[in-house]
Length: 417
Image 1: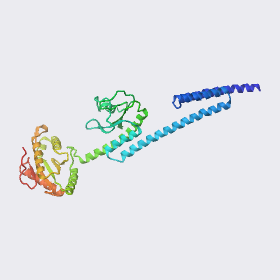
Image 2: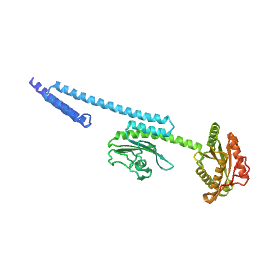
Image 3: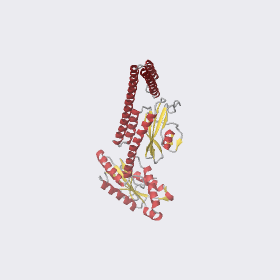
């Protein structure tokens, strides 16, 4: 009987010691993971030590249950917090996708994107940059707060400042403890994040966020911003492609001005507007003199170069409200809104003179003939207006070329000095 009690006592001592060590180890892990405070750990450790000293199974069991209940509460709280965080992130990502896919207004998309990000990641200033392929640099397209970048004045291959570096490297950056004081633009930057917008290796843009306080951003914030940037980049790319397709549909490939189809659509819109408000407008028809001989003598490559150069002259000569288009071959057409025939005639003569004075590619000197017709005096439909302006152009060609003629007037317009 004594032997059994002695063996039982040793087993109880061993079990109690294992319990004490395992529970204290568990408490240390909770402290290291910052799931409980050191004060809570001290209280729990004291309970474990007292239970072990008593060597009574009821005390040991009671203390084990106390520690385990504490662990379950902590894990439950952390689980709920993680689920809540994940739900919040999914909601933001869903809203970004929904918002971008339900509008084709790029400016509204860019502005709303920064608003949604600020709901998930509080910041003082944010800027969205997009990569401009033609200019080969980053261009700011939306700002919330103030325009933000770091190391201003330092130039990289893809632009100025930290955004240029991030664009080149295509890697996100997180700076949490900046102590550089007030900047030249009167902003204070204590924390800064910059992430690239990339789709299948292609740079779409860069997003910068800053906050006045240090340590405002965490690795989790950077991860979430990168997720949003990845989703936004794919849809922004679709918006840009849609714009590019629309631009190509209305643009002449050779000269990069409007094509004939788009001009006719705008002409009909202008007819409708002029009828509604009882206003005048005019149309110029422009043809390069002796262009066939130039093409035959020097080749189509030089001819194409001259056509593109004339289109550039027309764009610089025209007002912002005018519509300049290539009508076909060496013929160009210009719509002059709210312009009566006398003013259109003077504009045509100024254009003729500018072309005559210009030296084209390979030192070529060229002239143009210009026809002028106006609404409503020369016609009230597309067919009538284009017919009249073509007749005026024919008159300019017939009476010697290098001149401008208005429909219904057999004499060329007075020369502009």
